[in-house]
Image (cartoon, rainbow, N blue to C red):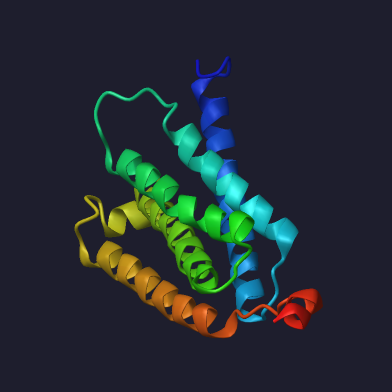
Length: 170
């Protein structure tokens, strides 16, 4: 039992949070590429991504796993994301900090999704039973390339207009 739930129920909630983080994260990326803040989607993305990492730590742990390390890294990366978004409101260099760190957090979620897919989906497990085979490496490399390209585009495209009052004071 975890938090009063069966392990299977808790696992389902953890997976649903992860999928919600990934889905809302891609909507946020679309917003970045089209120069829109998408405040609601951003809040969903950030909260579900944080909850995915936090719930991952609640599973019975007997040793440090790659998932635990990635969860820690994700929370570390999400710290400047939150600071840039909600404390510094994306001004100056914080805009790029936000875009890059949000992209990294989403990448971590997708990386884990690929790992889990190769562990749980029989057809993928047959292709890479130890996750050291070329199909697994190709999938992860393709994911990395896509995220680097999206990240570069997002940093270049995501610019926010300063409020009119701020421009008047300048």
